[in-house]
Amino acid sequence: MDWPLDVVLSFLASLLWPLARISAMFASMTLLSSQNISMRIRMALAVALAVAIQPMLPPMPDIELFSIAGFLVTAQEMIIGFAVGLASQLLIASFVLAGQIVGMQTSLGFANIVDPMNGQQVPAVGQFFLLLASLVFLAFDGHIALLLAISKSFHSLPVGLHSLAEVNFFEMVAWAGWMYTAALSMALSSVVALLLINFSFGVMTRAAPQLNIFSIGFPITMLSGLLILWLTIGNFATHFERQWHRHLELVCDLLLLSC
Image 1 (spheres, rainbow, N blue to C red):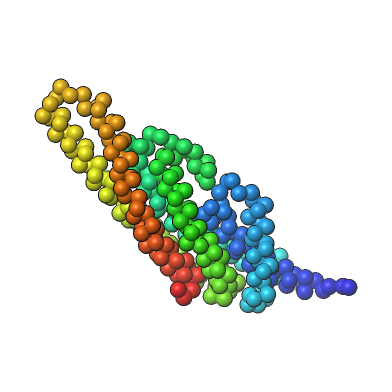
Image 2: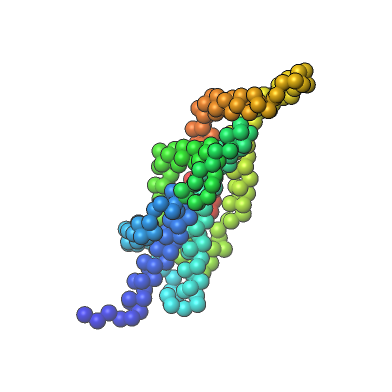
């Protein structure tokens, strides 16, 4: 059986352009973009999702796949998918930043371990917050919500030359401010408590200069940091839920979806 060339190219375009958006999201999405996950696994998941949703997608634009316009469409699809995955990275980065602030204020930041997602040395408290945020992200079905959003985005943002112009990237830039706000609000109680402890050490040093405050202050600060971390960790789910709703609003604004 002979297949006309235009039919073959049309079929490839209807599969490869959605695959470009989905695979770009997987490449930047939290957890799936980790170095511990093989690129073959990510690509297999992207191909499986693209094949599954391809019959439900709107018609592709009448653009040749192997042309300048076709390459521009492919690049735009990759940028849109990368932006959706980056939004999930910003969500997790809020809690990693909060953990690093707490770790540095409680003198627990001296303990560094290797981050398996980035391959860099990070404070142990920040890594603990990263693992906890990742588990809560999975408990909230965050990966399923992103897959559902990227599937619906082909109807709100159809594949074409002008799809990228409709994406509101300013929302992502503005949301970075929420990332620092959430991290500071989560670490604020620990910072204030450690400030009072350091202030008391300063009063002790002023009242009794013969005390070696450096030898006794460092272990007390670390023990106090562990105690403060244990007392404040119960609010983690509340902070995550608040950031999670903001993250969903960001994804919906990017993809022009109704939440």
